[in-house]
Length: 309
Ligand code: 8YV
Image (cartoon, rainbow, N blue to C red):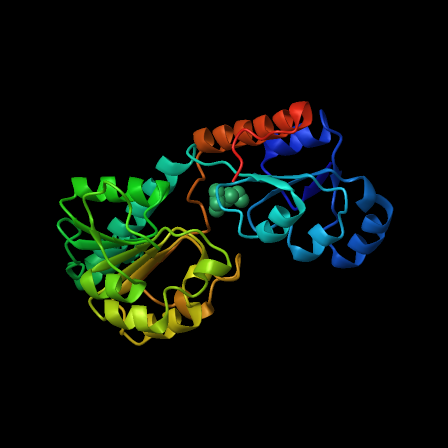
């Protein structure tokens, strides 16, 4: 068994103890020797977050039969190759839906009502020095577009309904039985709403879906919230749009090159920046760890996964 990259502490403890997993060295220079020695014996890989079983690593593991991923997103693993070779892949759906949706709402409220910016204003002593904080934008009753109305997108939409928002969405195909307005493209979705919330899965199919044109359609009065993957947004277009006032603001939990955040964003007061903490609560991470280990034990027991992708 192989551990790829850092994983949650509970999973880590089980991997090192119960499963006696080997850890792939982080330094690329050391990986070569490690793989020369162990690659032929690896049947299961466990990974998380930014570190998956990508194209090259998967090619180097001829006996690989399962990839167990801590996290709902598995865009760092080469699922096309896995499918071709009959390698099973699991993730941790459902258990993190509420927390990630809560994070989207936190960003939504923060970027529109400017609570983090106002907090900085108080801490700087500006309230006493210069008077009241400038007025923010109303968060209730807005037109909101959900890009990717899956489990997490749906949970975000239900929360926004309670705020009296008018919900639009775009998926590849209209979803059955949802009461929201379908828009045929990301461009059309952005043109129809005040706030665009990105909840689409990452990976090659969604890369750059929030393009310069989408941002232009949102416009100077529009806002972007992203709790999905940085790759879904054209970050090279986003940063100058925010800096140049061509987009009203953004609440971002994810970035194209994590943990790097574009330096220009740090200077902007109309941007809320989080360090990819969407699922980051004690309870949810415990549930994710439990589900990861359930997948692992199930595979070792009878070759099946509890939550295959
Ligand atoms: C990370 C996430 O997996 O589930 C996902 O897809 O992005 C997160 O929950 C988590 O931060 C562990 O790295």
